[in-house]
Length: 208
Image (tube, rainbow, N blue to C red; front, side, top):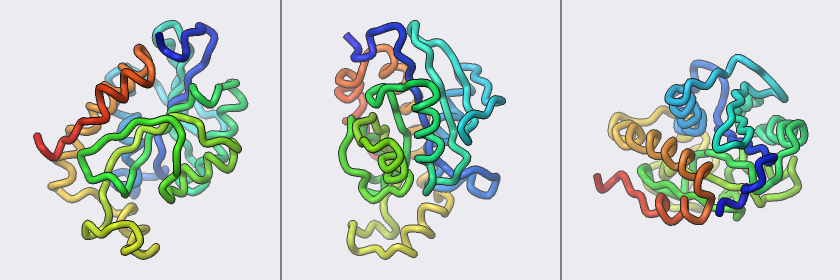
């Protein structure tokens, strides 16, 4: 049975990114890309704004479900997410955050509850504002600049990389990843975390 079996529990799904046209195709905006794809396929309307975020509200599997794109810029994502959690009285375990991950190669998806931020400043900000890291992460691999391991890339390299657009080869992979994340969200909202992890955490679009 899903862990959110009580019908009154509100789910909050966050896609992380930076607002503004110049950031649209950036690696750092994969969270926005996934939310936008899901919204397009479920006819969601992001015309409302709450707590420095564009939001859409819909009922899925008898639960109020809120999708949000914070407009605070990535490093201050927690300001928006913290406000939304408090406003809609969302339990930590019903918060889902979709974001890019340098430590996964492009084409890999990892879904988990809690854990380290891996240095992701958007996640760090959310943890700081919530005072808790026990929320669900949907991590989407973007790899590291030049394929270098953690500790072998400096801060400037990382910033330039995440604020750069996907290459044509990366786009070909990401174009398959984004629909898969949408499918994973549908499955997560219906079946819960354990089943979703078992089904999607082995996915590797580099091999397709």
